[in-house]
Image (cartoon, rainbow, N blue to C red; front, top):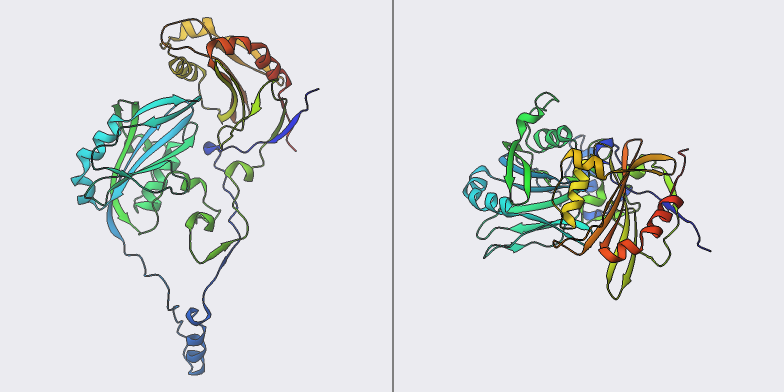
Length: 386
């Protein structure tokens, strides 16, 4: 008999605005560099002046900064391509980074979409960095393109105000003016929004978009993300969803499938490999703002089918119930020349989340596994929140 697995949901829900608790850290400062001796000496002489540690970092000097962020709002994730630096340097390289962003495409591998590009001659990639998908460095320049990923449809206002107020020293935008901060663009990867503004940087980190989601309640970055070489982390910061106390769920792995790799966005994955190919089932919770028709057309493209209009979508959509929650289902299993991939997708909305259940893989194997997928959905159960 199959055993039920108890899974604790760990999901990035950007639109919820939840903030994690700060990590508990210890900053180790050598005794001879702590400044205490100087303070004691000053105190003995009747002076109340504070003495800075000998190894204290220099105070950052504000400097003019131009920041450019290209935001691709894809059905399953949001991708950020960010360029920042001195205005003259960013401007001198504009033809290069703009062409690179316009040439980026999106491809699906193992059921997951990600950007792909051809690196121009002389360009290089940087080392891995926290919360960053990739870093692309331009030749003979200090300019680099930082590429980051977040789940779901992003809250544009919170992102704009993080860039404007925290990183460029500009006044905050409002819900009425947020659209004025973007230019609508189209590249090889489809439509995207371009933020391009100039301000005065405080000299603080201007990392990827995930940085805003990892801030503590006082607006500062958790020490785990700062990478301070003299600190020892005693407790890792929790994700936004963990801090929010997310619901839990029960599920039963489909017969013949093995547990696959999960991520902050894919909270459950099961894989079956045969001599003829592979099929996988994934569970992805996104913000409830996600629209069924947009996701179905994305799925259609991922298996080599063309987009369809709303009327055709309604004809192909079936009603379904998962754990007592009504939802929608689509089967993309018809034979065609574009691809040998097939897909069955389901979406149910519960609270602030849209839950996507997807089986994708070799079309014939997906057809044969349809009953197992249906049983998986029947066994899936949302746990009541306490």
